[in-house]
Length: 237
Image (tube, rainbow, N blue to C red):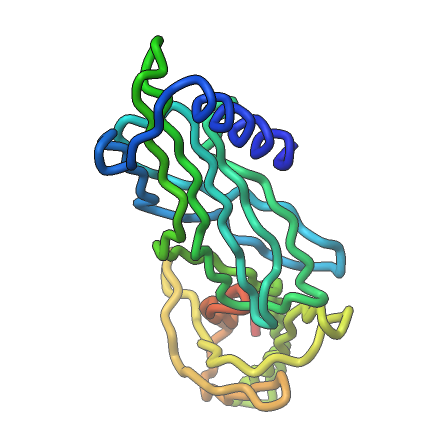
């Protein structure tokens, strides 16, 4: 479908050149600019390729038909491209990315190639075109799904909290140990209070609490550019 849209735009432009006298884009007042590129973020929990939506906003003047082809770059280079066109009024495209080869993290949208044409109205007495690169950039994130678990053991007045954290790595085709900064929290009324922040090592973090009363604990951590955040189930000791 992307190729068909571009072919239609090119064919109409060719007809306009034959039927009417061509003038420069400046003379015709033809202009087209990409003003914003964005996309829906993706969360990965298996090795399959994923679909996501890419969006393009633009401003134009004296344009009848247009096509924008936007390159999309992942961790390891060019991943895919999105195509937007006046054919059907499309400012959204659905692309496919494969994190097993393209990696996790920040993906960049742009640059884009613009083709825009003005045919001069009913009499085709004026023609304008824009064929150029547009360097507007956008981005979105592809994150591996993270997992957190918490074990709580009591020995006398001491409760030992041990967290284990993992993240799905599509390039490894499996969950792997992950070492974020985890927050050990205790429930206070209806809220959770952080009692200690620890950087996990090899996917494991430990913290000891001295208390005689039974309390409810959990562990949590925030998302980063390539991994989601996660919160464990609560444990009472």
